[in-house]
Image 1 (cartoon, rainbow, N blue to C red):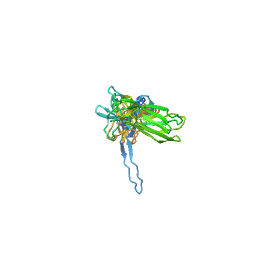
Image 2: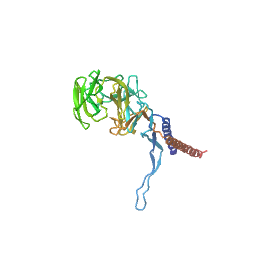
Image 3: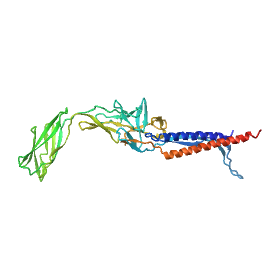
Length: 386
C-alpha cells in the first residue's frame, strides 16, 4: 500500500488536534485568567531507502535517501503570558500582576489557579467560584508568623479589637504670650482604662507672669516657660498613669492653637470592614478605629509552569516536570503583586487564533488531497488488469 496514504492520515489527525486546541482557545476568550494553548508538530520515523556511502579515491560519497512516514503532535504547550486587567470594584476579586498562582484546596487535593474571583461563604471562609478554599496564613494578634503552614482563610466575623489603657498623650500648638495674667485655657480629651472605660481628662492652662501653669483635674501641675516663643522649661506632665508630652508647645503672641494632638488607648471594638493590600494581606478595620492584619493570601511559583496539568475550573495540578511549588508572599522572591478589585482576563489573541483556524483548515484539506490522490493512483494500478 502507498506510504502517502498513511502520511495523509497522520496529517489529518494532527491538524484535527490543532483545530481542537484552537477551538478551545476561542471558546475561552472570555474565561477569567484562561491561558491559551498551542500545538507543536514533529515528523515521525523516516524509512531508509538508501544508505550513505563513504567517499572513495575515484568516487565521492553519497547521502542517505529517506522517505518520511508522516507527522505527529510533539506537544501542546500553554502560554502563561499576562492577561489584561479588568476592573470589577469587588474587593475580594484578586489579580496577580506578575508570576505566581493562588493556592486552593479542593477536597483533599491542593490545586493552583490564576483566577482570583473569590468571595466569602456563609461561614466566613474565602472560597473560589467553584467552592474551593483559598489558602494562606491566619494572623495571631495581628501578626503573621513567617514560615508557618498555610491553611484555609477565614474572615473572623465578630472579631473584637481589645481595649487598651491610655498611658501617653502629646500636646502641641501655641499658647498666646499676649494673654493677660490670670486668664485660662481649658482643653479636654478622652482617656481609657484597661477595660476600655472612657473618662475625660482636663488640662487647664493659666497665664502667669513667668509663663503658663498647666494643671490637670487630678492635681498634677507643671510650669511652662518660654524665651522668644520657644519652650525652655516644664515640657512634661504626669497625670496618674498618663504621661503628657508638652515639648511641642510654643509661646508666640496672638495665636491660640494649643491642643491634644495625639494619644494612645482605646475602647474595645468589633470588626466593621476589611480590605486587601498589594501583598495579599486581609486588613480589618474595627469600630474603635484600629486596623489589624487578619490573614494573608499565599502565592506559589513553579520552576516550569508550562509543565502544569490543567485540572478544569481554570485550575492546575503539579506534575513531575513542573517542579514543586515554592510558596511565599506576593511581591517577594520573584512573585507578582496582588491587585484587589480586578481580575485577569484571558490571554487568547483572537486574530492569532482565527489565523490558526485557517492554517489548520488548509493543512487538513491538503492532507485530505494526499489521500484522494493516492487513491487515484491505486485505482490506476488496479485497472492494469481488466
